Image 1 (spheres, protein in one colour):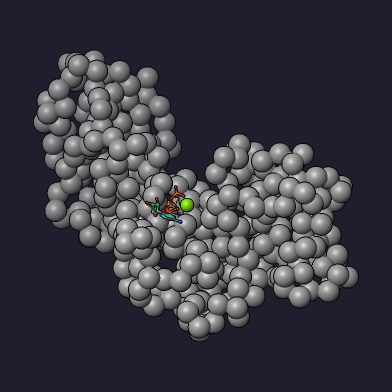
Image 2 (cartoon, protein in one colour; image 1 turned 180 degrees about the vertical axis):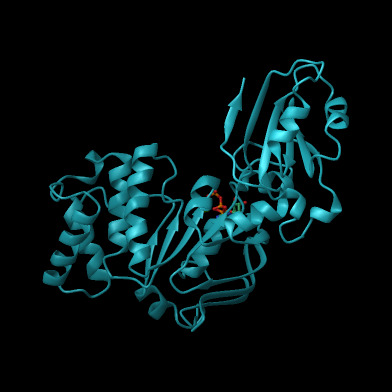
Length: 340
Ligand SMILES: Nc1ncnc2c1ncn2[C@@H]1O[C@H](COP(=O)(O)OP(=O)(O)OP(=O)(O)O)[C@@H](O)[C@H]1O
Ligand SMILES: [Mg+2]
């Protein structure tokens, strides 16, 4: 089986309102596949159809070669699901949460005890077996929810926003453990609105917005294809953007203006920076950095992944659109650095 999940023309409507709008994607065995998008993009609705919580309104969806409409029980047995909101049982202790969940899969008490012990150790929760869930920190609850999803040794682990709300240290710990699982061959399907998380962990991803898939590919390839490698951010202050753009015309492969910040996309950010060295006006800041998936999202939608609907003005020459890594936007490596 080449594809472990296949969606074709997949639609989800709630009371006639479309949340997932005829999307197509495939997930391969043993990859980490991401659904990246802002609030309301349709990520959770998509994964809920995959783990057979909701039936699709229309379209085809198969998981492990089985149709979700006809084989939901068999599919569920082979999935591990970490929902967006922790739904641990607050009345039960840490260990008991795992054991009760194991019961749903028909796992014997002694096997469940062994497996739960391994998982608690793997997720740094040994010693908390008898603690009530309420007393755990947010990061510990998240790790326990992931541990619970692994109790049945699933083929596919579905993680809906696994690290939202966690501090950087807690996020790091979760990802350390997920990397081990990936190395062990577990297929991971992940939703997130953290573009850094998506870029670092996903082998492939789709960028979603308003129920549609805008793009699909490997994170770094999408960045190169759409915005090139480097971005120079300019705090315009009172300088008109047009004057700055005239100054660097021919050196950039696209730009965006958000509020008073001008983003210049190019293959050689240093050269653009140099060209602006003796610009007669005053900028509030200049920052040379790598282009990211956030830039791709901005370009595709005119909005940030997390900001609420900032309006954006911008221009990318038609040649860059859809081109495989436009040579004009490729360059040698550089360190992201802040220019005073
Ligand atoms: N159970 C539901 N009933 C009615 N509408 C829903 C339901 N669940 C989601 N929606 C709507 O469907 C759309 C997509 O929501 P969904 O939760 O799938 O997005 P999401 O990408 O997971 O967003 P978030 O990042 O906020 O979790 C939204 O407009 C949402 O209001
Ligand atoms: Mg969601």
